[in-house]
Length: 336
Image (cartoon, rainbow, N blue to C red; front, side):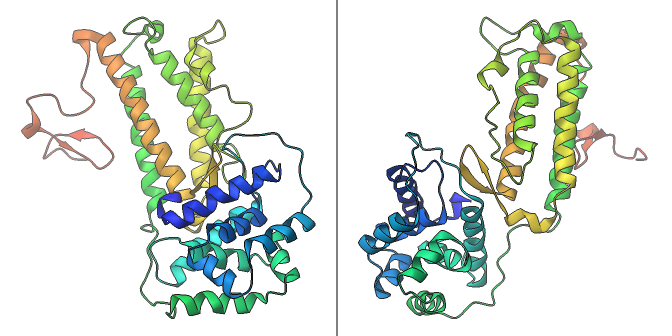
């Protein structure tokens, strides 16, 4: 989602994190986003707050009065968003769509906060005497434009079906490569300290379990994940165990995608604390898995030696074959 943010909107989110840390909170809530808007100072959102008499000093004092200071000593940048804060980000995207904008600016963040009427930020504004509808009108007045009728396209409607087809193609490439080497060879790397097929399978399986478990409601980087351990092979990592985790990971991925609708594509999920739309999160994993499956194919080809059967068009025979959208190879004129 951050790739749609303007520089000022990115600064707001950075300032929101700083405010959360200052208050020793181990999360980013709507109140921190409001503080970030006020602290940014120069965007449309900040200007609207100033026009309503909302100086940073006043907002900060009211937040500190209403929100209990935490005890967290966390100093890193990976603070999770509260459910309300995530909804604000989703609503900011919707506000941008309504206005016909292809970016998310500070004005959209403020409009998203206003829509979350039961959240701490809206409560702070109410306590400071701000009428939420007046705040909305102030933002629109500063923009100087009525909502546009120009369509704002998030994604083509069949995105999820296309994504599932691509994941199936990537998984098929891996399985066809694995079928050409003895399972005992999975543990042989090309050199000291380099990844073997077993390591790549273990890493991908761990990633899938972490990313796709409770995909819509929890961070994609689960607290119990040991990513570094995925690159180490131990006694428990037998062929049978690797196969089982491999099957479970892919099954979880497809179950999760089957449970999504096109309307979910603009919902916000987190990966390592960073907000993504569902569309962005799915696309990110598609790229990641294709990268590692490419490693599996290369390793399998090396191990199979002269007996390797090409998974695509054999070298020097491009005119003899075609490739389907799903990655299958066929001869022109064959019945399919």
